[in-house]
Amino acid sequence: MLKNLLLLFCVSVAIAAETPRKPNVLVIISDDAGYAEFSMHGSKTIATPRIDSIAKNGMQFTQGYVSGSVCSPTRAGLLAGRYQQRFGHEFNVPPSMSETNGLPLTETLLPAVMKSAGYRTVALGKWHLGYAAKFHPLERGFTDYYGFLQGSRSYFPQENPSKLNGMMRDRVYIKEEFTYMTDHLAEETAKYITKHKAEPFFLYLAFNATHGPNHTTEDDLKKAGGNKIKAMTIALDRAVGVVLDSLKENGIADDTLVFYLNDNGGAAGHDNTPLRGMKGQTWEGGIRVPFVVQWPGKIPAGQKSDSPVIALDIFPTAMAAAGIEKSPGKPLDGTNLLPLMTGKSKELPHKTLYWKMGNTWAVREGNLKLVAVNGQPGGATAQLFDLAQDPSETTDLSGKQPDDAKRLRALYDAWVTTHQPTPWGQAKAGPKAGKNRKKKVAP
Image 1 (cartoon, rainbow, N blue to C red):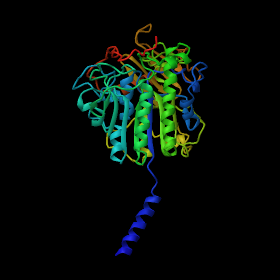
Image 2 (spheres, rainbow, N blue to C red; image 1 turned 60 degrees about the horizontal axis):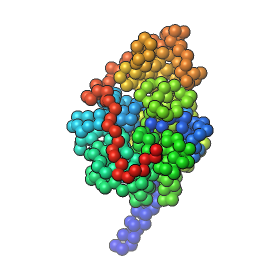
Image 3 (cartoon, one colour; image 1 turned 120 degrees about the vertical axis):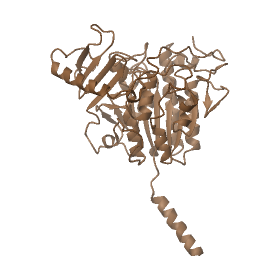
Image 4 (cartoon, rainbow, N blue to C red; image 1 turned 180 degrees about the vertical axis):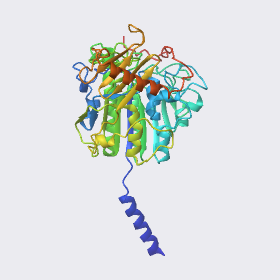
């Protein structure tokens, strides 16, 4: 009997040794940063070596997109793996408590799928996907949450936080005792990584940096020569470094698929050079973002790809890495990027991509992009651009290539028929960030 038990134990150990560890998946998303505010995009004034290191250790997508030109829709699309217009999340969730305004419960989110596959699922930072209890991260597939629900807040501790911008540990509001939000979120992330390094985890880290209010530490502002956006970016890069270092220190860097991207194009005051436009628009400057991925040992280092990809691709790519064959939810709009990143396929992930926010929209097929911007001369008249030759979208080709413009317009019109209306409509700007408990906001 003892001999049989010993044999059974040895067999179990052998099987466990042969079973490969499921990889961790880490998604880091920053907020409102400008395209030109990263040294990997050629910035000469802002150095982002830690963020750049993800590109050096894996793949940089030079034409990486998000599905929304503002914060909440992008997050909804990323976590659902579907164009957010399909489920009525075209606009930012208004900054007020509501039982109806939030990412619809009919959508199956990536953390829920990863959780069902045995993953610890952790969300940190900005949520912005609904404020009622039913929209809380722990109700949407996450096992752990640390952050705030609203779209923006002070970077410093608040004396009287609201239910929307107060810091929560899971479902409990906590006393705010930290120095600077960007550093704090990185430190908390490192703690979660250390605590759960023995089990596979899906970690979604949503910085509010570099979204307003433009709060900085005095030290970072001094380093930045008084430029607040530069100072906030210095802090963001440092924070990403803390998280990457934690993976190494815990011996799991090679077991972790890391995505880094921004949620939309740079907001007013940010630099999107050489791209046209900004946050809230469907010009390239509103939707093309830094998009880098690493998975040491799986994704060859130092690669660059000009293939258009989109944040919707994170869902199927994470599933594929985790060995999950299919999502139990509705059909995904994203594509698994692993074949492209590992060199097993040269095929373009997407033939066509779409964007829409109100009367502002765009469709891209190959290198051609048709853009309609509300308020331009002629109303929402569409313009056609060849992004291969004209990434800054300066030369309208619709007059010379009317057939192409007509074809892309037909693609867009067909896509729009799949949309659901957004219950809350186009949200207005939210309230000002909460009061600081200490006067640490740099002048």
